[in-house]
Length: 96
Image (cartoon, rainbow, N blue to C red; front, side):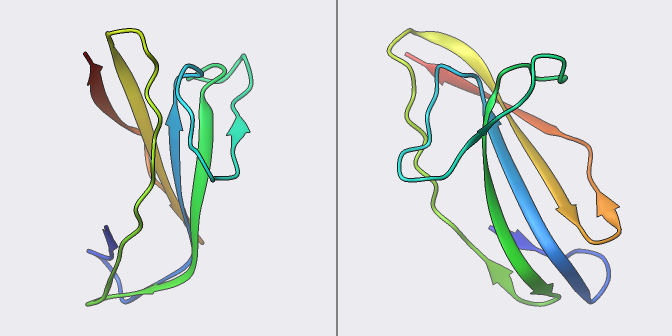
């Protein structure tokens, strides 16, 4: 779910969801982060919205296919809009 907490309108909004290359995003267009990136070779997908207005929220369901190997992995979220770039937010995913 996405909503504004500061300001009234966000333009050209993008949420990037990136996961280690052993994951996949079925039915989503993806890209690969370069080897020199902070998260090398992670697979990413973009959720783009032209405009987000304060007081309203937008939601999207994304399917992430986990690898068969049990381990703990980091998934990374980036949020961007015109004039703003957020720091990456990491979340651990435990595959059992």
